[in-house]
Image (cartoon, rainbow, N blue to C red):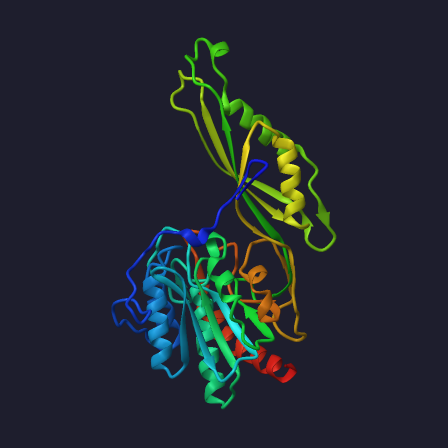
Amino acid sequence: MHSRGVDLIDKNEAGTVAEVRGDGRLPGNVTLPLEDPVSLLKALIDIPSTTWEEGPVCEALAATLEGAGFSVERQMVSPGRFNVIARVGDPLVTLSTHLDCVPPHLEARDLGDRIEGRGACDAKGLITAQIFAAMKLRAEGLDNFGLLFMVGEEEGGDGAKVANRTPGRNRFIINAEPTDFKQAVAGKGVLRLTLTSTGRAAHAAYPELGESAVLKLLDVLAELRAFPWPDDPVLGPTTMNIGTLKAGIKPNIIPPHAAAEIMFRTVTPWNDILARVLEIAGDRAAIEVNSTSEPIHLKVVPGFGRGEIVVRFGTDIPYLDAWGQAMLFGPGSIHDAHTAHEFILKRDLIEAVDVYASLVRSLLAAA
């Protein structure tokens, strides 16, 4: 859709990553170890699952949970990748997180007190803790709870958007991200944009014969940086990051094109921020909207965790409103996620199993 220079991108149109059989399954019969959380986490980390390429880990988890006796649904999102939904009874409470990771893939390393590797805390360690919590609850004879593991969180939440169509009667969703065992009370929204400027190429010795796309884009970016973006008493300030810059052909050519990817962490409706960006850019840059989410305010259950926190990072929660009241909680630190040393402490992994199980019991009692 195009409006005032804005191009809204549907990430569900991502490319195929694997061929799917007629029954919705991917080829292969890989299952994962369920003897202990550490073994499961290492096996999960060792399956690459960069966004758009989650197919193998989707199938491995689905097959493993089926083998463990859960009722499992493979919810197709795009060819070769699907959400994994596991149920015990008819869920009122669901534990959830995401299956995808940022690149590059980093294999699991056991460093004694911790497991290091891509996804260790964001979010394969959280998947592991939730699975063992679910097995613990089922062994106690509890039912009416579930697991929801989604693709695509790191690139716009296409898995969550599909999951939101089929919440059943669910009333509470415990979404997992690394929050240092603190309950999140609120979280910032996201507005991710690409700004593109066009000019006219010419010999750099005769700049008057050309038009620099770089200078136009730099002017827009400077004005965006200088603008007084909104503050919120709980969420804090709106922030803007210029993440990538691509421009030009050679130093001796006036650049005919320039592009920048920027991301706002928003504390007000994203449409308000977009309107201001459009006003500032004017006819100097076209705006492409890559992903959006609104700020969130979350359920807190007294007596759990190590305090409360306001998070700045994006999650699937804005796309899961049909699943009921949302919590955001997990072991590990967001400051270690997406890094070369990403890790989770083994003691935190084990503790998270008991904490997630206790949260589900508490919410089932309130449902």
